[in-house]
Amino acid sequence: MTILVTGGGGYIGSHMVHGLLADGERTIVLDNLSTGFEWAIAPGAQLVVGDIGDQALVGKLIAENGIEAIIHFAGSIVVPESVADPLGYYKNNTVNSRALIECAVKGGVKHFIFSSTAAVYGNPEKVPVGEDEPLRPVSPYGSSKLMTEIMLRDAAFAHGLSYGILRYFNVAGADPQGRTGQSTKGATHLIKVAVETALGRRDRMQVFGTDYPTPDGTCLRDYIHVTDLTRAHSDMLRYLRSGGAPATVNCGYGHGYSVLEVIDTVKRVSGVDFAVEMAPRRPGDPAQIVAASDRIRALTGWQPRYDDLATIVGHALAWERKLMARRN
Image (cartoon, rainbow, N blue to C red; front, side, top):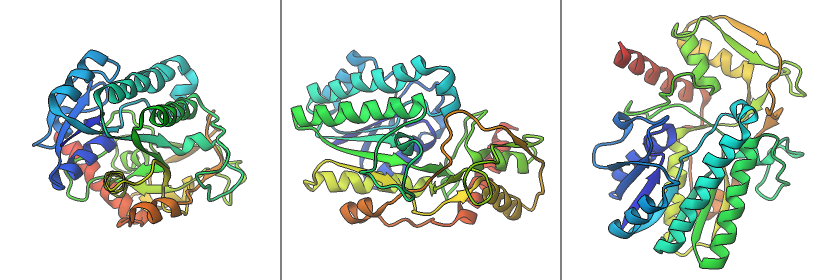
């Protein structure tokens, strides 16, 4: 049995490949390397450079390798960029995902795990937000992911495809063993930006919005360690293989930190008091969003290991230092 990982050269995908290989899974990575890196892919995985929208290529991979499961990470993920380029996001995240799902159905793939996002909730009425709360995305990024959720659900109902949809909250940190991490230049993830600033790769960083209805006026998010997140995928795959019903689950810890709290933690862990300037709100940013994660724990037995902001920051700092040494 073989697992196809789309976007396996990217931040989360590269962690997933390490985890699958450690579990003894035969793994093939499909990545166009537009934002991913060949060097980030663990030895032992087969890399195919190509696009998930190339149905001839995907169909051939499924048929020739007996693909049992697809774990789908490939896509665009920057909220403000999606506001500026909505059609690009609908093509890359929605149209290409539709092509991939069709190949999975035609090729007889048994299980499909989709990388979705908490952005499908928009500004939730309840915090923590549960999976059955209203879905009201406020950005094309969130909408593009929600459309894929709907397509996957409908295709699964019609064709018997077993699926898991994982709605990520804010993914952060890096592999504790230092094998991979967030490596994209110009990344917009808060902890990544703060760590780069602490290490002198940026001369300052900005806080976008200080007038939100939160305790300190800055956005509040649920930060999940990337290794805990990839373990959630492995647990979901195990659940589906055992005959579990299709499921949509949140992936977060159930508590949040504000932008200013994160920056203070990065300053404390790094020992650097770097420059921070306040800036206006960005379009598409919800005020606060925290996961209710009871469902994934109950269904799959998922138990996070790195639920600690200082640990997450420490791993991100260690990776950034390694990345700087690599570039030098």
